[in-house]
Image 1 (cartoon, rainbow, N blue to C red):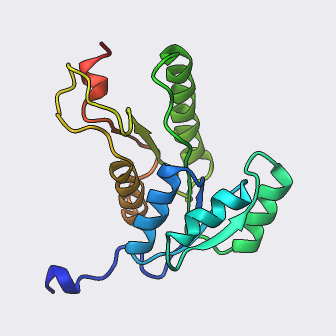
Image 2: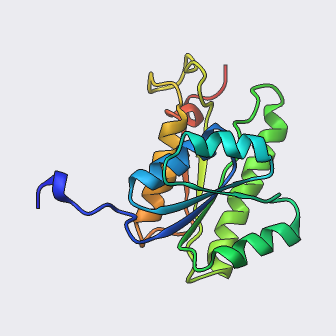
Image 3: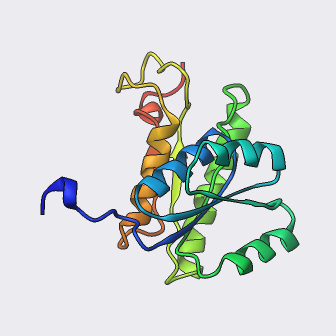
Length: 179
């Protein structure tokens, strides 16, 4: 089968993307392009409406992910779901200690959730600086882009044998250290 005729990796799946910022919108677009039926959720009605206008075939669903009742209602309404991607905007460059600790906790949560929720798969994507210039000691001269993060999220959805992993999408930022 030629690459042009290859089946879409997420064809026939249902995906909920939580987050109407740039990473969420990019992930929704990538999942839709991969063949998924996509619902994009966020707490801001106007921001959600604007985001879904740019995403043909993506269904909006307003809900506050920090409100347990709204989150449960949304998940119950959308069942069955194959994948849920929760995304937030990039962390600021100042205050790295706080954000580094927070990201470490999220990675640990992802690994534990993969164990406790099995056979449900849980993975964590750890983006470096997104839409910023590469650091001088970064081994790859490619500034992080939200499309890179979205592509990795969708790739993890498409590979059924991956769970409990953390993938750094940072151009080697972690290897190069901070300036």
